[in-house]
Every structure is written in C-alpha cells, then in structure tokens.
Image (tube, rainbow, N blue to C red):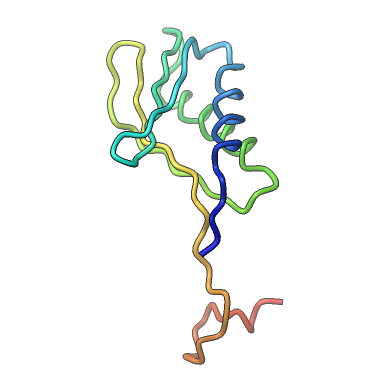
Length: 109
C-alpha cells in the first residue's frame, strides 16, 4: 500500500479557506483519527454556499494529485460550522484478476 503525506494538501486547503472573505476563522483537528473542520463564517452566507466554498478549496488543494475529498456536515452553532472532511486516494483495480470484470484494467487504454 502506498502512503501519501496529506499534510501539505491540508495546509494548502486551510490556506485557501482562510483567503475567502466569508470565512472568519478555520481550523481542523483529528478526533479519534477522523478529521473535522471547524469554520466560523460571516452571517450573510448559507450552509450551501459554505459547502461550495469548501469544495472549490478542496479542488485547488488536490490539483496535481490523484485524490478525492468527502465533506459531511456534522452540526452548527450560530456562525460556527463543523464538518467531517477527508482527502483520500481512490481505490482502483491495478491488475487483471481474470474474472472478466466490466471495469477490467485491460479494457482501459
């Protein structure tokens, strides 16, 4: 299994979030191995807009890497939002297993 250091990805992601004028404060913390995002926002943006901002910043941070991200809303209290957010390497078949799978690596090309 290949290990990828996600720390630089997280640093760029957090930096991109802090550049947005609608976000007043952001930090992330792992709790029992699960990364959580804590984001304080200005009153004029909606949760949906915030999720779009998170998605755009994720795309910027992942550029040039074979990664995906997943963001799941957890809770909010006034202007503080909490999300489970993770970056992960997609699982793909790396070899032909001989079972004639529809997504066989031999059929890619």
